[in-house]
Each structure stands twice: as C-alpha cells, then as structure tokens.
Image (tube, rainbow, N blue to C red; front, side):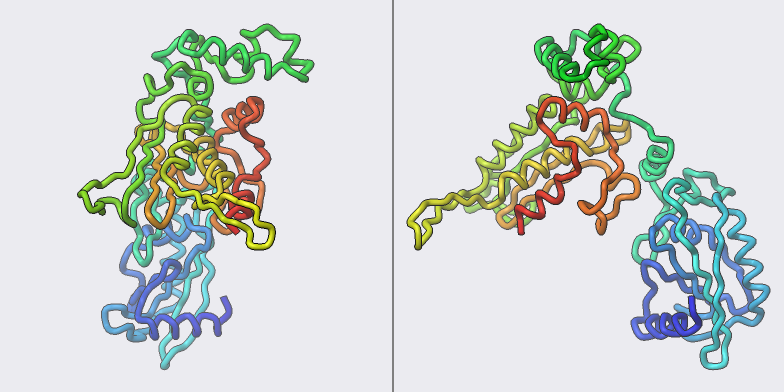
Length: 383
C-alpha cells in the first residue's frame, strides 16, 4: 500500500466513523496488547484480504492516538502472524497523521487450497474465522469442511449407501443407463456390466453409491429423506403473508424421486404456479405466449441446484427450497460456491465441479449438456 493510499483510507474511516469488511482498527498506542489471531484468520480467509490500522481509537470518536514505537509494533504483529497456519505475511505501511505515527498491516488472502488459515493455538476447528461486516466470526464446522473438501477433492456424491443393496436401483433405468454408457465408447463396451458399474461409480464395495441412488434409484428418499425439493407458492412477497382467506400457501409440495424426476416435477410446479400471458403482435396479428419466467431459465436454475448442491453428510438433512412469491422466484441450494468460483466469475469461467459423476451421468442420459452453459443461458433468457 502506498502511503497516500493509507492516508485516503484513514480519511474514509474518520469520515464514515466505521470499520469495514476489509478494515480493522486498533488503538495500540503503547504497543500490541491484544491478540490479533481472529482478525488475521478472517482477513486471510477472504478473497480481498484486509488491512489492520494501528493508532486510531474507535471508542474515542476515531481519534488518532498514534503509535509510540513503530518498530516494536511491527515485531509484535509478525510474532502473532507466525502463530497462524499457514503463516501470515503482513505488509506494513507507516504514515503520519496530526503528528502521530499510524501503522497499517496489510493481510493478504491465503490461496483457497490452503484455507482455512487458523490460529495454531486453537486448532483448525476452533481457530478459523470468517469476516462478517466489521466482525470476526468463528467458522462453523461445515465452513471448515468445505475448504477441506475442495483441497482434498472429496467426492461425497460417490460415498456408499450402506443401508442399500443393488436391488434398490430401478432395474430398467439401470439397464438403459448402462447401454447409453457403452454407446460409442469402445473401451467400455468390451467390459461386463459389473466392471462398468464399478468404474463409473454406480457401485462401490458391493453397495450402490449416493449418485447411483439419486440417478437410478427406485426411491432415493428412503435413505436420504431430505434430499429433495420443498416447493411453495405464497400469496405475498414474504413467507408468512396470507391471502384474503388467511391462507399462507397457494401451493405447497414436497418433491421427491431421482434427479430427473425431481427436475420434471419442479418444472411442473413452476408452470402451475406462474402466469402465462397471451400477447398479440399488432403488426402481424400472431399470438405469442409469455410466462412470468422463461422456462429455459427456470429449467437451468433447477438443474443447477440439483447437480451442484452439496451432498456431504453436513447438508444431507437440508432440502433444496423452491419459493414462488408474488414478485419473484427463489431457489436455495445447500452449499456455497465451490472452489475458486465467485459471484463475479459465475458464468464467465469454467468452474470446478463439486459433483462430476452426477454431472457426467446426466450428460450421458441426455438431460444436461455439462458444458458450463447454464448460468449464461439464464442470463440470456432473462435479458
């Protein structure tokens, strides 16, 4: 950070009288007397990193108190940085405001493959933090797991369903899928069905995999009750609002089955609970129907939720939620953006795939393209 950039940042802090997502203030006039581990962790674990500014007293109307011994402060900060895993490499900038020395420590983001950055004295679970506004909040177990799952490439979709045997899969669906798998694949076509099922993660250790149940099962929810969709249509703009008769829901449905079956049922639910307008072109006189939401966009959104949700043990008790309000359509899928994907890059880069077996299988079945075209399609349809 250039010295002028630091002065500009301090001026913004004093003007707004606030800390930010990437700015933390510490008084520390006589030196570092408090632990910085929480902030070092939270800044390291966000893509933009953060800046800790020493020498401003938030409790005294953001007064500039300054730092007595700049060299000693930097030493003490670095000592705490070394107690993090991985170690934090702070970059210091010093400036003078109103005759007082102000020190800034820039905390760079840790690469996602090394997250979460945590305080070694507490361990990975208790020593990992995330920044929320101006606060450092302990990561929950699932947030820590999510980083580990990406780093170690866990494949939760192909864990075995211990309570099930291969008879739980629909015989006709399985036979059809195996035929499609072998079609135009010379190497696979030479193998017997048992070998193909092992290679393609349908069967593992004598049991069907989670992916197999979700794609080919007779009733997947017998083993994973919440791996479905809760679909509701409400009369207002918020859950809890009622119509003139006092009804909270226009429609309320639990959608179950395999992923292809849930996709079809969810689309039918949306069609049933949204309007279709008939428009007559004044020049040609031709009729054109237009729904509240383009069906291609709706299909891609639901398919995306089913394919890319988190199927780990941490979220298997959470369904997908489909909500139709009077002014919008919402779809909530368990699990955050996977890997290096961010909101800014969503639909613009080829992302890592959380569930490659499911994605590939749906391509084989002719249900999904598996070409990362879903988000661009949604944007184009809604433009």
